[in-house]
Amino acid sequence: MSDLNWPMTASGRGHKKISRIRPWVILAAPVAAILFQVYVPLYFPLLQYLELPLLVIVYLSISRRGPISGALIGAMIGLTQDALSHQPIGIFGMVKTVIGYASASLGVRFDTGHVAVRLALGFVMFLCHQFLYWMARRSLLGAPSGVEIPQTLLAALANALLGALLFHLLDKLRDRGE
Amino acid sequence: MGSLLNRYRNLTFLLLLLLAQLILVAYQVRTNQDIRLLRVWAVSAVTPMARLLASTSGNASGFVKDYFVLWGVRQENRRLAAELDRMKMENRYLRSELGTADRAQALSAFQARTPSRTVAARVIGAGPAIDSRVLLVDRGTASGVRPGMAVINADGIVGKVTAAYPTASLVLLVTDSGFAAGVIGAVSKAQGTLRGVSRSLCRVDYIENEEKVQVGEWFYTSGEDRLFPRGLPVGQVRSATPGKTFQEVLVAPSGLSRGLEEVLIVLEGVHQALPAAEGTVAGAPLLPPPPSDQAAPAVPQQAQGPVVPGTDADRLVDQYRKAAEAQKKPYGDNVPPAKPPAAPPATVKPPSSPPDAPPATVKPPSSTPAAPPAAVKP
Image (cartoon, rainbow over the protein chains, first blue to last red):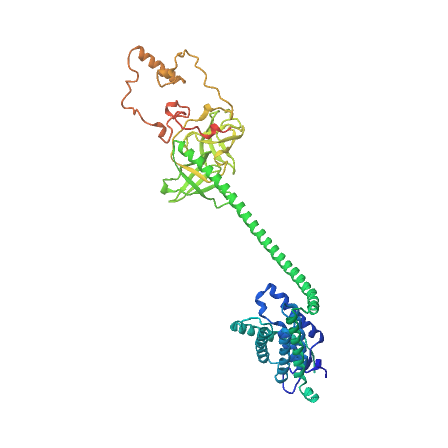
């Protein structure tokens, strides 16, 4: 069984639905997320708090359930974000590599098809992402960046909600089979 | 060692991946150089899609914006059209008000100059039937209106009050067949009875075929009916055709010629002189009265007395005055005291004299502030 055919237990004990992510979704979802991140906040500044690439990494990682593939996906998306930003390439890459790895590791242990788990995963992963990013910038670049905790918590909540919705939509794009 | 790496394969891969990126970052920071190649790839990959997205979004937003702009234009067009309609209606209303004000002003002026005591009334209703020729006016017994009173306006007679209520009165128009009023021709002096015929015409009955009534001649109230004061314009003759005994004279009532919104109800009528000397043909210039054939004094009579020898009676009075002067006696001292010296016959409702009575019994034309409109009308 390849990585693309890893089963996703959607519901029901003893009745497992095996579904896999379509290859074009693996390509299109990160690109769409990066485009969203690049383009949409220009017109809707409030949406800059939504970390859509992070949510896509989490989804793909928990779906693939392979820490290595999760880390690779995180690294690729993070490096692309770095390339489109003004900071040295690798900051987002390292942060999102860790996130992808961690998400994939958690996806093996939890039923990630449940909404509450997805909400919690989105919330926790966003906070981890922000913390790691803050640490990386502070330690590697020496950038004096402050942390606004209430704003970060609100953003985490918004991203968790958006993540639950996004995961549900991406579930619809799965190739389902018995 | 190999088995250890294989056991922690995932973690080893993660650490290697992080180490590689850490080295990348360290290189960039230490050399202060950028990894341009990666950025060019990323930007080249993202830019076309971003451009497509921007173009699509721009077009969509432009379309939506244009749609809303057009929608706004349509809304504004509707609003402007509604405003134009409102302005048209307002303009029409103001024109109507202006016309009403003109009519009211004319009526007010007429009311001020007419010697009769009148009360202005506004027409507030018409007859309930299609062919009814009655009006309801907003003056009633509370204003002194009584049935039978004449109703006029600045152009002529309108009708008469047939019923008076406390706050309103019913006016029978001159065009109603039940209406009747004594009239007299301004030129022919033909007297008859005015009756309504149709919505816009009246007929003058009892004018003999020998009377020379011409088309265009003005008829005035004669005062013989004791309802309408003498001298009010009635209308112009439209046609006069001889019949078996009497002519059939049709008159267009001038009082109804411009519509009816305000009228005057004659509470106390005062007879006026007929504008007979004002000419027969409408608009024709008139010559002054011809000089007397008798030996009229060369000195103007205005310097000697107030009476101007114009008529036979005046000349007779003038002869009496001269005779009194020749006898050196004061003229006019032997007036019988039983006769009321200052009785105003002109203010008496019914005329006690025939229409062609001497001017002393009728208010002289010069005393009236203005002649009736018939004298001015062409």
